[in-house]
Amino acid sequence: MPYLPSGEASSSDPIYSHNRPPTPTIATAASVAPTGRRAQDKDTVLGRLPPSGRKLLRGHMDLGKLAVFSVAAVAVFVWHVGPVMCEEVENEREFSYESGAENGPEHWGDIHKDWEACGKGRMQSPIDLSDERVQVVEHLGRLRRAYRPAHATMMNRGHDIMLKWAGGAGAIWINGTEYVLKQMHWHSPSEHTIDGKRYAMETHMVHESADNRIAVVGILYTFGRPDSFLTEVTLSLSKIVKPIYLLSLFLCPLQISVVHMPWVPHS
Image 1 (tube, one colour):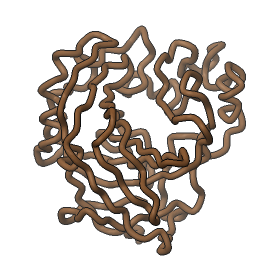
Image 2 (cartoon, helix red, strand yellow; image 1 turned 90 degrees about the vertical axis):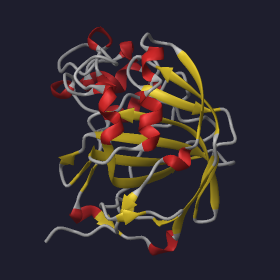
Image 3 (cartoon, one colour; image 1 turned 135 degrees about the horizontal axis):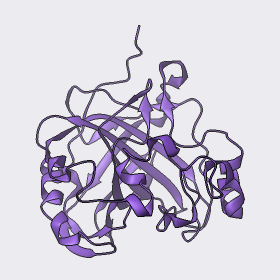
Image 4 (cartoon, helix red, strand yellow; image 1 turned 180 degrees about the vertical axis):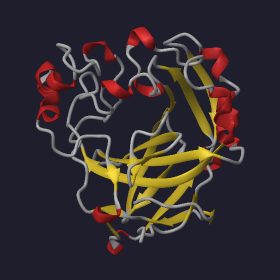
């Protein structure tokens, strides 16, 4: 699934697969299982700070620097979520990352029935993509992207920034199946790692097929060349300082540049 930096990507990129795919929790939009890091990381994770400590636009990371991120790697996750849309947690007050707390990681599986998988300890996010567990799945073909400029709503959700398209932003095709772009959001530092390395930022582009399959394209960033898409997004951040503020924009997801080369295991 991942790509390492090289030249500019075409609109048809090879897909790499993890031989032990993640097992996301199937949940309703109103009750999604929490995933991510535990309490020891909470002071450095922009996208997962507890409600009392979130300073989204003026905290540990200067979001004005988003414009100088460049793509380091790309991963694609595809799974079936049944008849409901996969959404991010909108209200994180029901759980915390504090070890030993009544709503801490040890008890996530008990808070909601939909979160039971969190108590089983199998393949929970974040996922480390390691050399020993990655294989190329040739039959998946190539990831074909066809994005277009479209109206989007930017939302400060308190724990992250999300762009949500009402429609018309285009889609990707995986193994002949169309997945329409629904929304994208950012985590800093990255939620997932490659060989234990955590990156400066991770973007999740969430797509959905006609039969409710979800394809999430995860893009890992390092500090580097200016990124035109992030520059445009950054210019609007000051207008949504307070949660839950909304802002209408007209953006083209195709501006998101992807640099890559096939996964090369370390010797």
